[in-house]
Image (tube, rainbow over all chains, first blue to last red; front, side, top):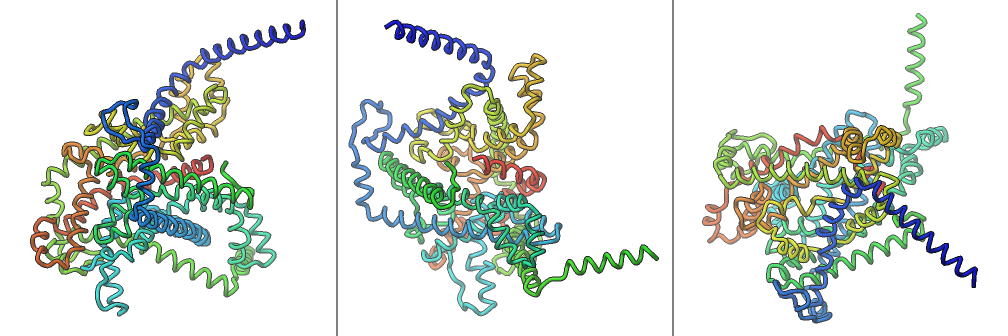
Length: 321
Length: 312
C-alpha cells in the first residue's frame, strides 16, 4: 500500500517536473516557434484543409450551405462513377499514359546518364548536359506549342523529314488522330525531362569510387562491361528509390500535357482522371462527383506507393519508408 | 635530350593506356553519335521557332523554314508589343515571379532553419507534417472550393499564397543547413544572439547556394504556371499572365489546324487566328527569360536536386 502511494507520488512529481521543463524549453525556443508556427498554420490551411474537403464526396454538396446542413449520401457518387462507362475509358487513358511515361521516363534517363558518363571530353559533356536541361525549364504551354508545331502538317519538321525520306507520301495529321496521342505525350515528356531526370543518376555515378574502375580495367574489362558491372550496380539504390517515388506519383502525373496537347478530336484518348474531374465535376458544378474522382485517384496512388515500397523492401532491401 | 626521351616514353605509355578494343571504339562512336542526336533533337525545335518568329508571316505559310529566317523582319515582335493584353500579362508574370520567389525564399528558409535546429522540440512533428503534403493532396476540386471560401478567386494573392510553403524546397534548404558546422550557431548563441538573429545574420548569408537553387525552382514555377490563372483568374483580364495568354493563342491554333479539312470555315478561322510567326514570337518572349537565367544557376541546382532527392 505504502509502496503504491510512493509510486504515484513519484510519478506525479515526475510529470510535474517534466511539464515544467517542457515549458522552460518552450520559452527558450520561443523564437523558433515564432518562426515556424505561422508556416505550419499556412500548410494546415492550404494543404490539409482541402483534405477535409473530401467529405464533399459523401455529401450532396451545395455551396454556401454550412457543413452540418449538408445532405449525406454515402457512396452514391462513387457508385455513379463506377457505373459510368466513360470513367473506364478515362482510367484506361490515365493508366496507359502513366505507365508509358514511367517506363520511358525511367529507362531513358538512366541510359542517357550512362552514355553521358562515357563521354571523355569534359567540354562536350558539359555542353550536352546544359543543352539537355533546357526543355525542362520551359513551360508545358511552350513545350506543347513546339510539339504541335513540329508535328504539324504544314511545315512541321517531322512530316517534312518523313516525306523527303519517302517513308510517307502524305503528311500525317499527328495531332488529329487518337492512336498517336499516347505516343505524342510520352515523346514530349521524354524530350522535356530526360536531361533533368538524368541529373540524379549522374550525381550517383560520380559517387562511385574510381578504384572500382581501375580494378576492372586491370582485369581487362571492356568499357561496356564496366558500365554493366560497376556503373549500373553503383546507381542501383538511386534507381530503386526514384522508381518507388515515381510509382507513388503514377496517377498524379497531372493533366497539363493532356490538356495542352489534346483537342476534341482525340478526346477519347487524351482525357485523364484529373481532366475528367475538371470537365465533369468542376465545370458542371458537380463538386461532389469531381471530389469522388480526386479521392479515387489519391487512393490508387497511395496503394501503388505502398505496394511498390513493399515489393522493393522485400526483394532488394531498399525502401523509402 | 633527356627531356625529349622522357616525353617520348610518356607518350608511348599514354598511347598504350589509350589503346582500345574494337568493342570499346564502337561504344565510343555510338556514344558520341547519340550525344549529337540528343543535342540536335533538343535544340532544333527552339531554333526553328526562333527563325519563324523573325520571318515574314506571309512567307512563313509557304513552309520550309529551318533554322534561318528566309525573309527577316521584326514586324511580328512589333505586333506583339502593340497588343495590350500581352503587356498586362507580361507585367503580371514578372510581378508574380518576383513576389512569389522572394516570399517563397523567406518562408522556406525560415522554416528550414527551425527544422535544422537539433534541439527544437517541434522539429519532428513539423517535419512529418510537411512530408505528408508531398504525397497526399486534396485534389483539384477541394482546392478550388477552398480558394473560393477564402475569397481568393480573382485576386493576385491566389498566385502567391497557396504555394508559399513547399515541402520539397524546405527540405532542400534544411539539408544544406545540416551540412554547415553546428558550432557556428552555438558560438553565435554564446555571444548572446537570439535564434532569429542567428538565422538572419549567420545562416542566411551562408545558404546562398541552396537559396539560389530554390529561387530558380520558385521563379521557374511562377513564370511557367498558367493553370492557376485558368482556374481562378481567367475571367479577369487585368490579372491574366503571359503563359495564360500564350495558352489561349496556341489553343486556338490546334483547333484550327485539326479542323483544316473543314474548308468552309477555314478562311474565317484564319482571320481570327493570329499568324504562325506571331505565335512563335510570343513563344520566344515567354521562353527567353528562363533561357537567360538557367545556365548561370546550373551549378547550384544540380547540387540542390541531388540533395533534395536524397533527403526526401
